[in-house]
Image (cartoon, rainbow, N blue to C red; front, side, top):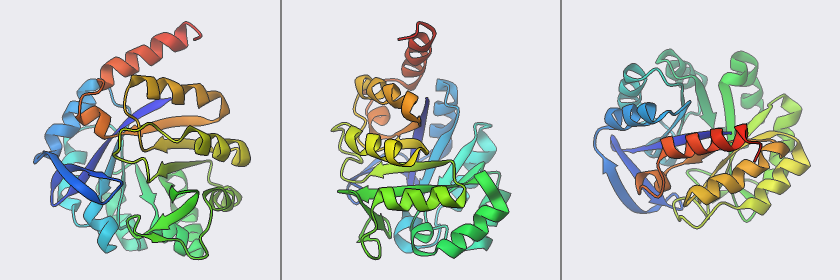
Length: 248
C-alpha cells in the first residue's frame, strides 16, 4: 500500500483546511521545499491539489506545480479545477504523471470518456463524498441527483477505470480517523482499486487501512497528520515494509 503525502496549494502556499473549507493553516510558503522533503522521506508519489482551482474551476497554482515537477523526480498527481482538455494537456506537458478529476468527471461523463480514451490511466477520478453522496465544486455542492459514491464508482468501472480515489469530506483535515466502513463498502461492491483520503490521524490508522489491502485498497493520501508530525512518513513506510515481510 502506498502512503502518498499531500501538498495542498492555496495562493502559492502549502496549506491544510478543515473539511475542505475552514480553518486554513499555512505550513509552508515554499512548496518546492515541501516536495523535496517528501521525496527524501521516501514518497513513491506526491498528491498535489490546487485548492484555488477546485473552488474557481480553473487552476491558479500552475507556476508552483511546475516548480515542484522540476525539483523532484517523484511522480506527481495533480488535481483542482481541471475541466477542459486543453488544461489537462498543459498539465501533462509540465511533467505531471497523473491528472485527478473531480467535479468535471461527475458532471460530464461524455467528457470523462473522451479524456480517458486519450490519456488512459494517466487519468484518475476522485470520488469526494459526504454521508455517501458525491460532492462537487470544491466539496461545496451535492452532485446532480445526489449520486452515491458506490453508484458513481460502478459507472467508472464500466468505463474501464481500474482505480479511484475516495475522500470522505467529513473526515478530511479532522484527524478523527478514516471512514473504514465506507471504504469497505466501496471496495466490496465495486471491486475497484481504491486510494483512501481523509481523516488519518496516526500510524495506527495507516495500519488499519493496510489491512484492507487484501480487499483492493492500494494507497492512502495523508496530509495534516504528516504536517503535524503525528508520525513520520519514512517511519511509516519502513514499518509497513517490515510488517509485510513478516506477513503481519
